[in-house]
Length: 120
Image (cartoon, rainbow, N blue to C red; front, side):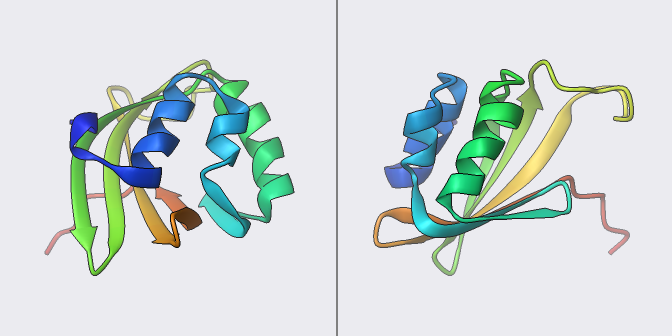
């Protein structure tokens, strides 16, 4: 499924799966923000520290399951794995939705959410 992605989002996921901090950070604009686990991480310096500790440090990998383009934003649903603490997570696969906003070839915002099924 990853081969259906292109551009900076494909580069971003490839860099994460390669545990490459510098390549991952290079996908973001200098003033980008990430919202992960209800925390807002602003600016490329803070994003680099987050990537070093919680992505590369925890050997996070993404297995892309679904891709959607929504008015120019890219939504990627992926199974996450790695060496992070899974003790408070439900059993089975951890699927997170990644909402990417891209401008001028760089990620300007990334929101990572564990969505719940909707009753509607």
